[in-house]
Structure formats: structure tokens, C-alpha cells
Image 1: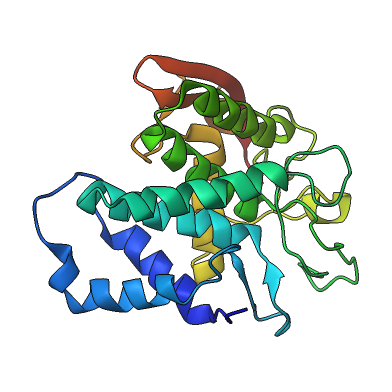
Image 2 (image 1 turned 30 degrees about the vertical axis):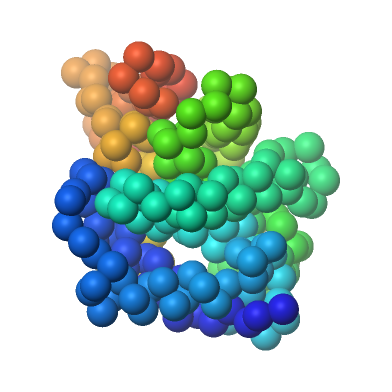
Length: 262
């Protein structure tokens, strides 16, 4: 079994941030970055590409976030190169996520870490595979990318069902933080914390993007948040109509939320 390092996630994140989703005739295979990226892909576990180590420990474990990141990265590669291997890796990761969508067996579809973690250092330990907003959002993004290039109608229906199941916990206020946005995780101990949109750090930016992703997903990966002119009292920033777009012809209004002042 080959060992994956954190360099994989760093390169994947860079690829996700830098690649346009428009296909191109440019030959990327000769670029140094592409070759470095391909070397990393070739070094992954062929059967379980999202299996590797993390900062929590050095044990090889299946990591849902890695599967989701790989799906989005390989989706971008497929759009630019039409390389069948990229599509097949997207599908392999997606099938693993489908088969492992409730790893803690609590009846809630969602994704987290394969390790225990005290997210806020308050002595409340989240067990392995506890559902985190960030991890679930990254997985959902990967699933929607797969949906975009999957031609099999039945498989597309399965992907759609899994995405909607992932979003289900966030469709009411059960797991909202005090200001009315999805909390860091589904743990009651974590929902009491607000993650300020004004805070600037790498982790906060990921969380902020995860909130937008979970609530305002659309096909091309951009968020669509329509502000309402009503319900904008002194106690609210405003209300948003949340629409999930699977394609131009398939969209669902899944929630209207009020963003409250802290």
C-alpha cells in the first residue's frame, strides 16, 4: 500500500483554485505542474485513492475529504484533457463515498474525519466520522462535479439522491450557529460557536466557502444567493433564497434563511 502525504492535498487545492472549468485545446501534459500533479496521482493507492495520512496521526486511513478533493481535481483535469483516466478516478472516489456515507452509523448522511477531534479545545471530543460542515461541503462539491460528467442516467439519479441527503441536516435550524448559519459541525457542543465571517484565516476561509457551497451550489461551482428585500429588520442582515442547481433544467429551492446579527 502506497503512502499519501499532505503534499497531495496542497497540490489538489492549488489545482482547484487555479483551473478554469472551460475546456481548452492547450496541451497541459508538457507543463511542469501537470507532470508533478500526475506523479502525485500515480502515487495514490490504486484501489482506495483517498487513503492516506493526516496531521492527526500517521496511520493510513480512508479520508472522505481527500476523496472529495480528488473528485473535483480530476473533474478539472477531465474538462481540460478529456482523459478517460480522470473520469474513472472521479467515479472510483464517488463510488467509495456512496458506499461510506454514514460511517458512524447514526442515521445522518454526512462526512467527517476518521479520527477523534476536539474542534474548539473545549474538552468536547467529536468521535471519528462525526459530520463536519467543511468536509461534507467538499464531498458535495465533488459529487456535483461527478454528476456534471456522468452520462449514466441511473448513476446521476443516485448522485443527486446522495447530495440531497447530505444537505438534509442543514435545511432547517437544527444545526445552525447562533447567527443563523450552519454550524461548524452537527455536535451540540459545536453549534454554540459562531465562526465570524469577518475573521481572516485559512481555516475561516474554508469554512466560509463551505457555508456558501452547502447553501448556494450551482452547476458551474459558483454561488447564487438572492437577497430578499423583505425581512431586513435591525436584527437581521437579510434573508436569502437558497437554490441548488444540478443543471440548467434541474434546480430546487431548498431553504430560505435569515442571517442574524450576533
